[in-house]
Figure 1 (cartoon, rainbow, N blue to C red):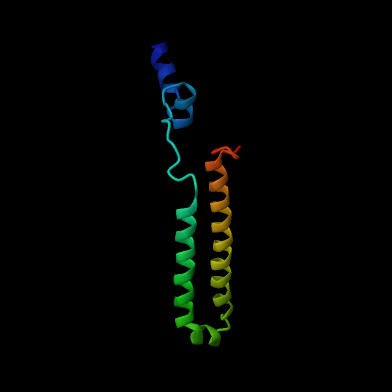
Figure 2 (tube, rainbow, N blue to C red):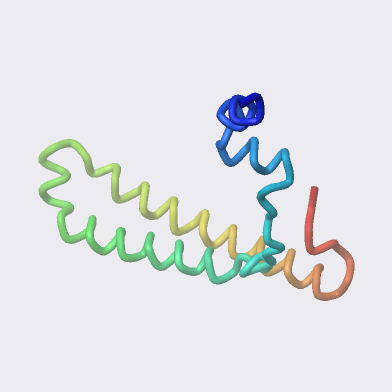
Length: 103
């Protein structure tokens, strides 16, 4: 009877199960260490957004939202800066000057 009460008081949430050692984390390696493909996808997305906003520029100008065009330009430009940074970082990792994982 006492065992049943203890079992019913036992928490079954994942955090408690992990603390008791009932759950084990799988060792999963990162998919992309360089980050370059992700940044390129972002740059392409900003370029597509620029074209879409350019198509609707007259409507946006009427509504006072023409600044959206410059948001897409800024996103594209910051993406290029990010691409430069990621390439530089990846080259340093490959050369052994930086660790693959940073704290």
